[in-house]
Image 1 (cartoon, rainbow, N blue to C red):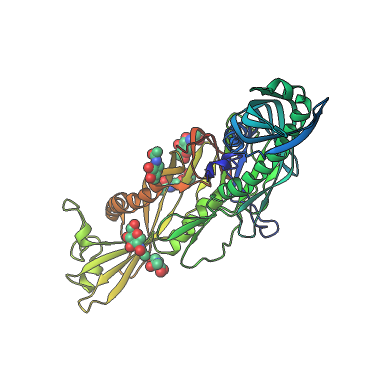
Image 2: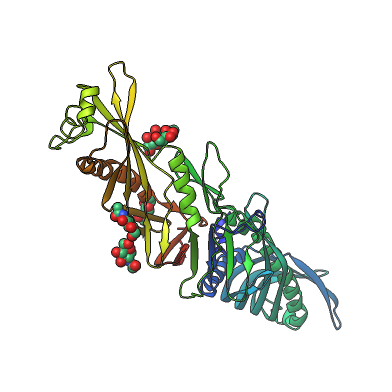
Length: 479
Ligand SMILES: *[C@@H]1O[C@H](CO)[C@@H](O)[C@H](O)[C@H]1NC(C)=O
Ligand SMILES: *[C@@H]1O[C@H](CO)[C@@H](O)[C@H](O)[C@H]1NC(C)=O
Ligand SMILES: *[C@@H]1O[C@H](CO)[C@@H](O)[C@H](O)[C@H]1NC(C)=O
Ligand SMILES: *[C@@H]1O[C@H](CO)[C@@H](O)[C@H](O)[C@H]1NC(C)=O
Ligand SMILES: *[C@@H]1O[C@H](CO)[C@@H](O)[C@H](O)[C@H]1NC(C)=O
């Protein structure tokens, strides 16, 4: 059962995917460095250590010839692995192919019973086997399914045992000990083939399902999901394993094609952390587009939302002094300001800095007694916002720090007027409703493509021209 076996290479936080459209870039790349591979190898060795303890060795029987006595029949049975220690492990990239897991400096101890029979003579006893200097080498091929899920298969496995020692006790144990080399080579053969069988089995039934815990589509909220399908099989180079994810946020009720492409990212050569995530602006901008199109960034301000101490209210009366025509045309009526952020704001990445410069359009309507609405003027609002990112163990979170707003009159059916008084009102509203709403979303965070039970720690962040570069160590936390 142990999904943890997967841990094996676990970290492969990663994994693979379907071939994307030609020439399309991933929105997110996860890179596992040599340090990460080292961690995965250790975790993998621990899992295999448990697995190999579960190896069942077959009983075996044989004959030997003793002078004057003739043929003696022996049987070894009830073999039980009592200990297995895989002390040395390494996971090495096989560029262009996959990964090679090497386990060395290993020891297996087994315990069992023996029986010897020669016509009327029956003897039995127990024995211990110590298997030293086991070297196991497993080549893993990484791929991706059409669904964008990672796959792993064993392309070759070999195990080599250089030393088996059998210690037989019981009456006549000394006799069997005379044949130890024959017995030892039987053990060696049986174990060598069982080890690879067990590993093969563990890769198929534990590691692959574990890799497939990678969320190919993760729901972010009731509007959006993120597509973390692999765009191609993981790429293995000399020192790193890169996994290319689509990294696109979409409206899960109706996904529409994105009209811009992800930037090509050139990842810095950093190796101090186990994994790095290069998260391009594409991820954020596809999110912005979906929320904007869904009207999430639309807002409306009515008089009942205006704070009591405001020098202006959303009534035509209150506008009398500075927009006399409005009060004259629509005496004693209320106004509604309807705002939208247009176009969808894109996040600007510059080294060390994240910012946005959203534009808003605000249409002012008079609410007529007939309950019809009459457009009277339109405002343009610009502002500069900086984005601050924060992290927790599995997500990128953040918040926006609002800047000053600048309001201008774009169109008016009621004459030109000074919009300064409206600036405070609009500012108050977006600070108190729009930003908190967006910050709430940002606090919920963007889930990273992580395998189950993986946590991040020791995070470091760099902001590059088109992408965030997040370095982290990882921990497999299954309790
Ligand atoms: C989505 O969730 C928000 C609150 O998180 C709620 O206001 C909104 O009505 C929900 N939308 C749908 C379609 O369920
Ligand atoms: C958001 O506001 C804009 C401008 O007023 C409008 O065109 C758009 O239809 C609104 N979107 C939604 C989903 O209401
Ligand atoms: C980030 O941008 C803000 C506003 O544009 C600026 O004040 C700040 O100095 C910038 N920080 C860095 C590290 O460039
Ligand atoms: C936003 O920043 C740009 C460039 O730094 C500047 O030209 C513009 O005036 C700023 N807008 C506001 C509303 O501060
Ligand atoms: C990380 O953030 C998510 C979303 O806000 C939250 O559910 C989770 O508890 C946070 N984890 C930690 C360790 O703070």
